[in-house]
Amino acid sequence: MRYVQALKIAIRSIFSNKLRSFLTMLGIIIGVTAVIALVSIGQGSTKSVTSQIQSMGSNLIMVSVMGRGSQASLTYEQAMTLKDGNYIKAVSPVISSNVTAKYGNNSVDSVMVNGVNSDYQAIRSIQVAEGRFISPMDDEGRNKVAVLGHNVATELFGFTDPVGKTIKLNGQAFTVVGVLALKGSSIAGSDDDAIFIPIKTMFYFDKNKNIRQIYIGASNPDTVEIAKNIINNHLLVVFKGDTSAFRIIDQSQILSTVNSVTTTLSLLLGGIAGISLLVGGIGIMNIMLVSVTERTREIGIRKALGAKKRDILLQFIIESLTLSGLGGILGIIAGYILAVTLGKAMNIDANPTLSTILVSFSFSVLVGLFFGVYPANKAANLNPIEALRYE
Amino acid sequence: MNSDKVLIKMRNLTKIYRIGQNEVRALDGIDLDIRKGEFVSIVGQSGSGKTTLMNIIGCLDTKTSGEYFLNGIDTSKLTDNQLADLRCSEIGFVFQNFNLLQRMTALENVELPMIYKGVPAKERRERAEMLLELVGLKDRMKHRPNELSGGQQQRVAIARALANNPRIILADEPTGNLDSKSGNEIMKIITELNERGNTVVVVTHDPNIAAQAKRIVRIKDGRILGNEVKAQ
Ligand SMILES: Nc1ncnc2c1ncn2[C@@H]1O[C@H](COP(=O)(O)OP(=O)(O)O)[C@@H](O)[C@H]1O
Ligand SMILES: [Mg+2]
Image (spheres, helix red, strand yellow):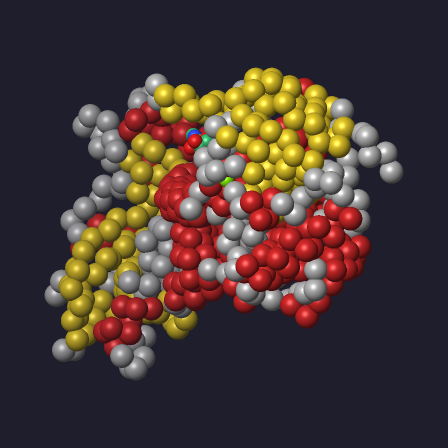
């Protein structure tokens, strides 16, 4: 009853001064819009990064070798002994080098060439679009064959079918035996922009036999931890107990690192947006204080007619809640539109979640309450005589 | 009707305003009894303390010392909320400058005291319409104060003062802002209210207005000079 009446008074007072009410709400509107848009985009990009990492394959283990003293790397044979066929089903050392690739008059500078063995295909779940991937025979025979990532193939060949053609890598001729399907970029680098050659061919091509990076496939996702232990024990023997000589990471570790980064980022963005909400709240307080002064006489009249302190308090608090709540609703609408639009542009799913909407709305209402209490209290405590004398 | 019942009883009442070092004795030892159903005018020059006295009678302001009993209740023992309740149900104010809320229609202004009393919406509306009809504004209910003449605004204010059927009507210079014709109309309505049984106190500096009351209390420098009961 009292509340309904106070709400009516509040709505009337808000609508009797539309421009001012809108400007007052603007701070809250912008704040809520920013919170919803930024948090949703943060969540959207987290989701997309997460799914990219998961697409790396949950069996994947990566080993980086930093070395110890004179032993700075592994030999190919040392690396391949990790493959026990039980917990570890695939091992491919990788040696990378930057080259200039040429086909006829087409030339691409600084292309990543990866020397890998045939296991690499299974470890990274690589799809071949045309031809085939590197075979064990290519490796054993040190064949000068190359498999092209999707983008490299397009850049060098355009619409020509690359399979069977000869390309030159830093002037050396390689026969193209396959082209990979488009994969999209991922955290572990894009295969689309790389060229793959047999690792043993790479030894001579790059004059480098030192293995510093190994991709390993565990036999199934549940035995990744066991596989990591086996690898760890094995390498500890090789490096004489020096744990800092190598690093073993798997997909779930990358995921949790990335997640902690993106969570921090989301909180930061949300916090910045939250500050603008707070500024909006101060705007409300400012206008409410002006409004109390302007309506001093009204307050005096109401008190003379029997309004109690709490009636006046309620009237002004509800007015400030209505302002902030209305601003919150407009902010939700604007934030939703902004998040969805930006999400489309960035190609991520940035639709605001219900909890984002509810939290930012409650926050805006809380801001209205917090910054409304002081002016409302001031109004409620006005001396009726002074208020009636006020011109 | 028990016309001997004392509604307002003041003993040695003072009100002192302090402004820095200076004291203003706005009321200086007031003894006053007003019985139920009386029609009293309080008359004095500007600055004599009439408004101050009126505000204290209406529980809008509080005395500095002395005693004030309203309907037998010692007002100094009441809380802010109880005083607000008294203003709401027992007292109807009529001000010199009408003091209507500009953003509301005549009808809504009259409903206001009933809102604070918690009267249900339908009853409130019906009673407000009835009261506006009583003061002759049946066709002006939806008008806002700035669409009404001074006399009409004061009639809305009187209807509002009657909203919760208070025992006491307090009018502070009710004709002060009006031409003599509307002033007379207002005094006629106020006189009728007294004839219907309301206790009425009118504050004025105008002897002609004061003369319309049944009893005249003269006040000067915050003191009561004399009491003059008119023969009926
Ligand atoms: N709030 C106040 N502060 C200080 N002095 C006041 C205040 N209200 C009234 N006064 C003083 O008290 C005296 C009586 O004022 P008031 O009751 O308004 O007189 P009247 O209504 O008879 O003109 C005047 O001298 C006035 O200046
Ligand atoms: Mg006065």
